[in-house]
Amino acid sequence: MRVIEAFREAYGAAPQGVWHAPGRVNLIGEHTDYNDGFVLPFAVPWGVTAAVSPRADRSVRLLSLQAPGEPLLIEDLDRAQGWARYAVGVLWALREAGHDVGGADIVLDGDVPQGAGLSSSAALEVSVAVALDELYGLGLPRMDLALLAQRAENDFVGMPCGIMDQAASALSEEGKALFLDCRSLASRGIPLDLAAHGMQILIIDTGVHHELADGQYALRRADCERAAKHLGVASLRDVTDLAAALSRLSGDERKRTQHVVTENHRVEAVIGLLRAGAIGEIGALLNASHLSLRDQYEVSSPELDLAVEAAFRGGARGARMTGGGFGGSAIALVADEKAGSVRESVAAAYAERGWKAPRFLPATPAAGARRIA
Ligand code: GAF
Image (cartoon, rainbow, N blue to C red; front, side):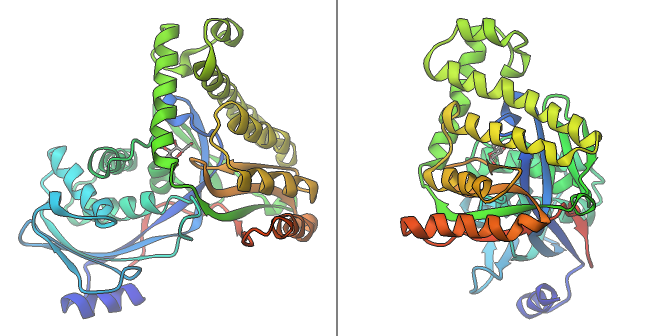
């Protein structure tokens, strides 16, 4: 394994272990996690592999095969820069939570397509979290590790994300999507045997990432918090009478509420259909989710909209943007025999506008974080 070779070369000894944590796509349940709602992501076959050994002191040595150069020596965690903060932040979060965690030598190797919105950052955090958990004998439950990884991203990196991505990376099971109630944190694997139904989920990586994304994410969170306050509920999850709620709101608060409340219902409907063995029927809900994200939540982009429309025109059962939005990837639910025409339809639509060709990545639900050596 090249991460082991690189570790030996950088630090002069074999690592004590190697862990892998995957990225994710979200089947449905977008921008619901920080509203105490429901999500249904699954792990993708790509992720981050971390070769790690503990150190006798409290420093971190860190090398990424995607950022070649000398290993960084980080004695003061606060001084870490850029991508290194995602790794070091996990150590910081563990220590903040009172766990007795010393230093670590780390080499990272990632194959999550960059900029595709498939949560390479959560994969990085969770790979380091599971490694340190085992090496320092903490024995923490997977959900606790996901929460610590989220804390690292919220309070050390400064991105106010919800729990979905870290939970998907830490808890997913092969062949299943992860149904997560983001309030109780109860989770359940939902079998998603696409092949048995002659179907596939195609990831369409638009190759575009609009830089305003992070600021907009925080603004959407704030809209939701304001709307919940306005309605006198702890979070938008608690809205039961949507019509009554909407009549008391206006502008952005109204639109965001409309999205979040209906999206939670769509997640439940998708789970009902999957249980009934009606995978193809979830397509309409994927389409509805996209329209809601485009028109009510306003987090789509022209590239995502075109990918979704062209996929549908090409014969997809349904399609939607996945993840935070403003670029990244869309997913399309496609019968095997339509995979070619869906790709052609999307590629032709992009070519017609003179846009850079999108990338197509078939995704099967993969296993969550685990030790691999
Ligand atoms: C990003 C965030 F990191 C998640 O927590 C989630 O809010 C998602 O956007 C939108 O559903 O991936």
